[in-house]
Length: 248
Image 1 (cartoon, rainbow, N blue to C red):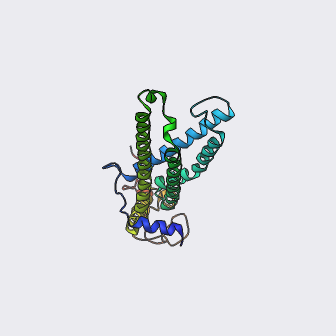
Image 2 (tube, rainbow, N blue to C red; image 1 turned 60 degrees about the horizontal axis):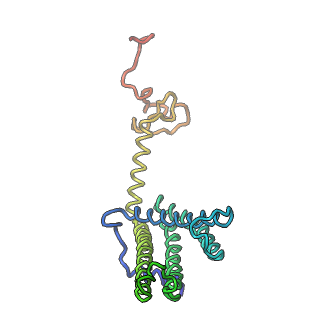
């Protein structure tokens, strides 16, 4: 079975959110998730350039080179998906935002795996700071494990909530029915008619104002009207000046 279809069936049993942070629109939450993800990617890229290429020590300059290369490559890899997510939010494109959601879900799974490997598989007591060791090894080890568990929980919940927001907006855009699209077409048609009525027509000196007469143009010529009848005033005027020169 297709894993994407299986994943989608699991998602269908979950009710999507209708707002972000108790009252804000969903697109604001998704935009915040995109911004945070973009800033995270830029931090990885900039620090890698400074630490490896320019030889300027910054944060995480003592991390293994293989880890730095992997983080930087994944940050570069995330940029097209971030662009797709931005496009989906700005222009309400469900397909583009869905692509970013799949990437976000994969990132959450991968972060969970690496955090479990770093904090739980490896002994966190070996990384106890010297300040905590002064209070006793047992106390220091317990404090360290409690802090690791809290940090892990906060990170996973925050990332999962962000993915939940993105998925909720995807479902909202997907369920956008044809009535809303039809209403937009009607509004666009009304704007086009108004613009055509107020603007200059195709006739000489602007005499072919659409909608200002009952007949419709059928002949080709400077006055896009019938040969007899159906004439319109020049520029839609209401008074015909007969005197020359015109009276002041």
